[in-house]
Length: 115
Length: 112
Image 1 (cartoon, rainbow over the protein chains, first blue to last red):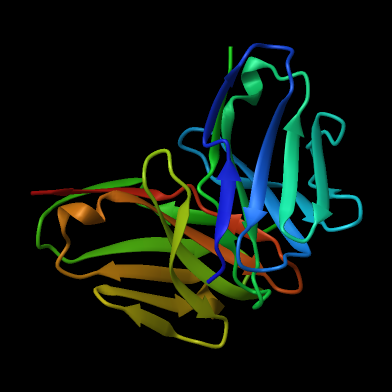
Image 2: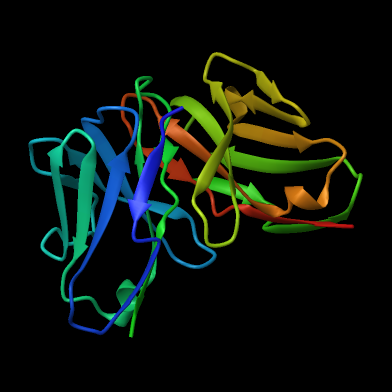
C-alpha cells in the first residue's frame, strides 16, 4: 500500500492564529488526496477532496475560506486552518488512494488543540 | 445518504476469546468495504478490504465477511490478544465516487 506522512503530529496554538498541516505521499504521485476530521468518539468525516493543480472540493458544511487546501505538487497537500478557534480542536487525517483508486491509505494524523 | 453503524460501541473480552464486531450500512450501492484499526491518538491501519463482489477476506486471525444485499459486514477476531486492543472502524466506499463513509467504531479491550 501507499505510505503517507503528516506534519506536525500535534500542534497547540492560540485562538485566532493560523495553522498549516502537511500531508505527503512518500511513494506515489497522488493527484487526489483527502482530508478528514475526527472529533472525540466520533466518526471520521470527510472535509474535502484535494486535487493537484486545481481547487479543492469541499463537503457540505465545511467552510472553504476557513480550511484552505493547497495541492501544488503530486506529493504534497496542505491544510491551513485560518483564525483557529477552540471548536476547531480535532484530529485531522489525510489519505490518498495510491495506484488502485479504490482503497485509501491514511496518514498518522495531526492533533490540533486551540487554546 | 449512506450511513454506517457499528455495534457494539465498546467491547471487553478476556484474552484468548474469539469475538465478532458488526457493521451495517444503509445503501447497498458500495464499491467496497474496509476494516481499519485505530490506536489512541494515531492514524488508521487498513486491516481488510472486501470488494463488493466478494463475500469474505482473511488475514491471519482476522476474517471479514460482507453481505451487500443486507447491508452487513462482520469482523471476526480469533484467539484475541491484549495487543488487539484498539478501536476498529468500518468504512464503505460509495459506488462511483472516492467518498469513504465511516462508522463510529468499536472500542475493543482484551484483558490479559
